[in-house]
Length: 406
Image (cartoon, rainbow, N blue to C red):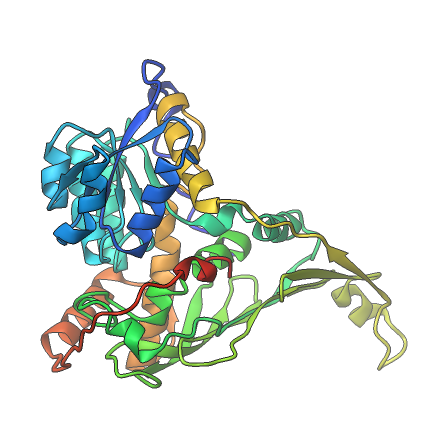
């Protein structure tokens, strides 16, 4: 099967360790939900050897509490990057700024951690990756916390070790992303082509798309049906059914929605030697006594199937997965520790999100790797031709962290 984008770590070991550093001064630009969440982790000491040195936002009211704590505050990412007060930048702004701020930070000699997605579209992701490759002595990491979740690590181990045999089918029903109308009205950039570059795939499903290609490899062809504003007053996709072909002949489907409740989260991988199902926080492995392809060719009975054994695999939770990735980021800067989620690997999930929407919009199957420039052109057309009138309202505070473990 086509493997995930296998970008080597941009840091050769001889260059990646900075033994003279005993801590990393971290700046966070973008103090929305995720920016504040990461700031809290660092302040509470969950990121060993990481110090929150600065925060930045275009909203002054989001900075006041940090300024009171003696943390430097900035009104823009550019100002923070030029300040000389940070060693590393965590970028948690709206999507389109990830590339421009990432490039500026790398050019200024900073290490970067980028929230998902690493860029709004593949062409921008390629630009950011090219810049990172031009700065091999700086760390470029992505915030893909499902990679430290024991359940996904175990699934990947089983698949990569060949315990399922040759993969035959991949299915992920990920409709557990319900969002009310007011969620999309909580920010002027949300759910618009100009502000976000996409909908449920780029905003909600990036972690599942990253985990899927990390585990199974990339498909080589996709064909999608997308609902644009099907369940909400938005101009981007909120309902997707995608069919996938893989290089070895396996097929797959990815189904998602932000309008369905109660939703489902079912990840199923079938191979010649058995089947894995992750659903309702239960991971079940069914093994064939004889591989299905062998049984198919040798059985003398038409309807009988090979015997099976069923095993439920314990899957403990992952405490503070975001902080674990941030700690790994700091360790990579100081010690040269290999990155769990190299930033360059973030192009896989961006490409999948882009191509699924693109296929649905043009009504054709698309071969991968996709032409990033073609989607960028289409996206710019959607932005220029948009007549959507965005509504924004103040919303009450709520604990959004409950949506993390999907």
